[in-house]
Length: 460
Image (cartoon, rainbow, N blue to C red; front, top):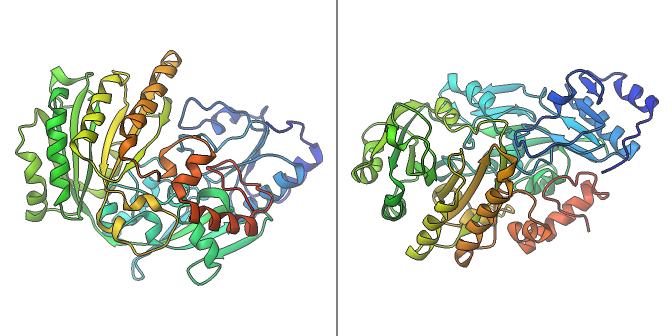
């Protein structure tokens, strides 16, 4: 924690010419402004700068630096690690920087650094286009993209950062710079997986893809069917077209029309199949799993933007996540995955997921610092629970899942999927050679490590 004593004159200077709002602990709305998605995070910043322009961001960064305050950057506030807040520090809150401009002729979209997936999806929807998104609509576009950007349709369209054309950034010096493949290419490279280490990203420009409607099949089985169905899912995805994404997972089904009454609130096994498109090709892709006698579920053709809202994590819960990327998924790995489902905190919204890779995500020829993109599978346990008394049990479950599948782990990891698991995990996740190159970029743009509340890459 840094000092919470703030010079009144410095705060007055920050207010002067500031288009947004500056909130302090005694101001109305302070508690709402500091609330994050993960209810485990309870920190009290000294200042929350709700920026309304790039100039506001630059002013806030310079103020925090000059006052010696720890700086946190908040986009969507969805990150499980809770790094969008700092005790006694200054929060650069980007949520008002959420303007979105679609250029249908160019096939691009410019997205403000504080926008969520929901805003981006709804902005592109009228044009029958999508930007490569994540798995829930409440995720912030900024942090999602800077970490690489893994989503339901990555097998078809690649990662979000593969579709990134331009980023506007405010550096630790409070300067505004533009990063593209031609302009500041070292920074542009680092922003593909290196996270928020290099500055505050105030806008992104993405390539769009033509897609309006997807086909979704969410199929349920009793938990004892999990091992058999998981193996069938693995085999199905080995030959699946790139248009097909999704996951196999254990969960606690909520009361919905498509959930049999006897399955509500109890552990179940499910497969989620999402096809980029509709019609005969979609039906053929879903057919292998549709023929396995599911107990409950639903099959829908629906707008992409609606689908992206279907699996939104409920707010106000305690969260702890992690992941292991696997070089293969033999029967032994599947057995380890399914056995750990018995330890989940049930009933709860927790998810125990097995997600396929491959397709465009793996075939990209880029040298971006994303070694996990080549893994054919990822095991991603997400513990979500209400009662603080369950903290130890929920966290232990996540660690036990990782340990169970560790023999098949590549060591690389999508850092957006994990909390604070130590410096070694960050270095391993990015790859040793990438990490050194990222440290060189960090030294150029943030030599004092001002932006260290992230999966931190230290300057040389």
